[in-house]
Length: 305
Image 1: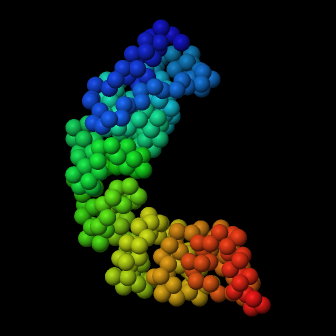
Image 2: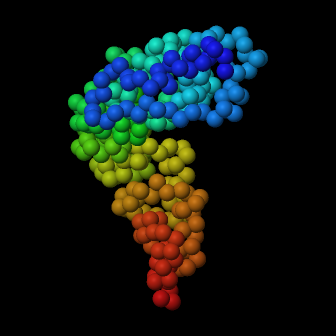
Image 3: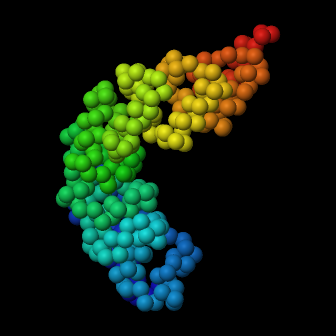
């Protein structure tokens, strides 16, 4: 490793043993120890390639900083071109700020890997308001910020004014009253577009025969319905349900989780087995049961049982 790279290696906060400049807001001490990257991986990186000797020192430092944190620097730089011009001080400020909110170093590879735009966010106008939203609008205590962010890193790239608050308002109007469930189980709903994602899913359920109140009841019981693709999930599964299973809407109303199961790996095979065995089972029993439980159901409900 060159002297310049070694200096960058030691001075960058990404791998520094110093405490972050932001005071932690909970009792957990941030984990600032980062495991070393295997040498074989670093040696293959452009930083160590003579073919890339013209890379600026700043770019080399950032590449090494990202790689040491376990982040694919090539992917991050590609998905977030702004990283090319952001300073190391700015990166370090982002890292320190997130650590002060209870996010651990070991969380960074997944968080930044999924959302590299976080690395060039504005702390005051973008990141800070997200944590205020978690606290004030969702009643998330500071010591649980990490749990929510790890569940849905996209929260950190979402505008509070344009995305998070409108989504929360819409969901509450639908009947989502459990803020704890929204925060810890279904935060992905908060980063989903009301206009392009949430409303169209509800409209699709209405288009296949459910009333507005029935559709609302279904998504309240199974929030995952808001996350399924209309073209790749709803349509093929509903077509099979109607055409092959001769299903009734009442069955789906009673068990909206039907759409959460794989068509090819669960729904079709289980349905074919029930037909072959001459057995008719409620959707929930047919799909939720384990393989052994399903076989037992077929034996106990067969024509010769």
